[in-house]
Structure formats: C-alpha cells, structure tokens
Image 1 (cartoon, rainbow, N blue to C red):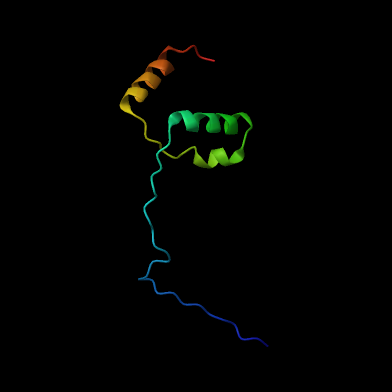
Image 2: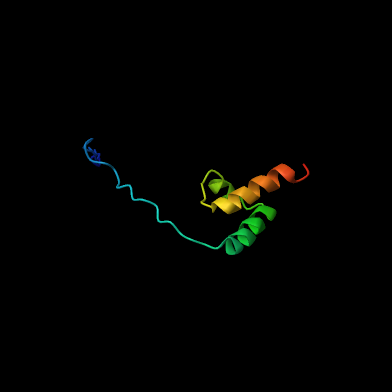
Length: 74
C-alpha cells in the first residue's frame, strides 16, 4: 500500500505574490473595431471583461455623456 502524502502550509506565507497589473496604452481607433467585432459575433470571452475599467480622457467622457443623453432610445 502506498503511503499518503500530507502537505502542510505555513499560514504566515502568502500562496502567491500579487503583482500590479501592467497598463497598456492603445488607440481607441485600434480598440473599437476589435471589441465591436467580438460583440457582433457573440464571443463569450468578451463577457469576462465587462466589469473591467478603462481610462478615457475627460473630453471623450463629456462627449459620451452628451451622446447618451441626446440619442434616441432604442
């Protein structure tokens, strides 16, 4: 009969080191066509990122807010 292996971990040591995520800068013109294509074709991996935050400039934010409030509801 084989011996059973028991593993003991120290509770003081973290299981893994948490590293800060690297920030990637990409042009909106390069990003939008890819996201739009993934949405049109219902790629499920896109749903994994729906809660992620993105950074945009304040002037784009203002334009998007104005667009949201002025566009006809669908």
